View (tube, rainbow, N blue to C red):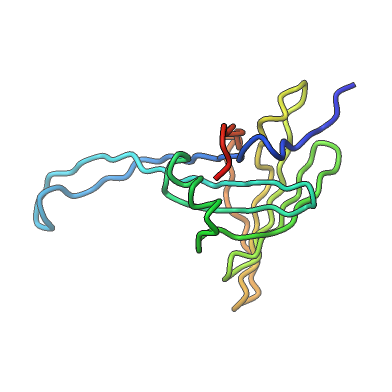
Amino acid sequence: LSRAIVYLSLGVYVYEKSYWKTCTVGGSLSLERELRKCSYYRYLRFFPNGDVVYALMNSEPKIALKNIYADHKKVYQGRYRVRRRIVEVEVDVGYMLLWMKLKLYSKQKFNRMLIQSLDGEDYNSGEITSFPVTNDPFCLHRMKRMY
């Protein structure tokens, strides 16, 4: 019988989201357009005591992971819990409380988590926003050395 595991000491879970953006080339009056690929990354690092570190950055893992371990200002702390194959994450990101519900893959593939829901409560308005999610998983980015 396999049991759901969140890998704690092996690395950081990374979610990459890419999209295409049209940009004007050669100044504001130019009609020439260029298509550029843009990416952002969500990072989750789990600890055995139920703490989690969360970051949303434009930096690729090789660069961003140094910031995550250097107590960077764009890194937020929260709590998580695991129930069966569901990981519930709650993080205060300064202007809102963010909730994520993630599902661990089964059959010995607990190195990936699929986002089931992503919601946030704005501190100023109290409004709850549900953010769109895709089928792209968080993948465990193993590290030889923790910074």
